[in-house]
Length: 317
Image (cartoon, rainbow, N blue to C red; front, side, top):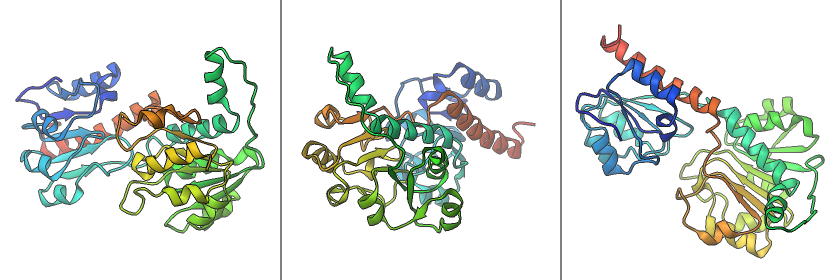
């Protein structure tokens, strides 16, 4: 990690630190900016040390807890990179007068495209047959077509609604579950807004696009997997904790569902080797929002909040 006591800005997302373009963009504005070069998220104590004395923090998935905020009395602005605010203690920020800069949905197309990749890959058995071929086995199990199937989209915000749009050419049924009224959007898209039970019971593919809250934690539990069709697939590109991973592992091994694709895990990197070894599980290391274009768009959005903050204070003219 680069650091210095004179820094006004700290940048924690590894994707930004690894990008020469973004690193130069930030350094041109803030020459003494600190970059996290560890290649991973920081722990609470690491974050406290890394951000000591800074006024603005550009943060990704690092844990900005009450303990961290209390240890950073000079912090005035947190600019959020990426989707979701579940790693930020918003009440603690408000209590200490720390402002939040964040724009939702900046990486929606990148995440939605990955979800579609998973959906099509699972349907056409791309992942399993490709792995078999690499092992020297010629298995021509072609799977099924997406056309005519029912896709259940749980969470119809920025990303979920984009998945619904991308599904339009495939002539499939679309069921939507959301806590908000999405009937107008569903009518426009030829989808139906229904309850959670209906989605998991009637869908051939269930794709998750919800934020992590007390209500969505372990939303997909043992009961939910038993209610799904044995031929069904699960896709999760939202937050790992939305799925009970032990229940998923049992469902995959017992044949309660046919397969799953995960981009996110409760703990990252995941430590459950048995889950990762399931032949009917395809997994990626949380890359949904990491397409080059999405990384740059999310970073530029976060940078703009920092620039505006220092313009207000008169430090940038």
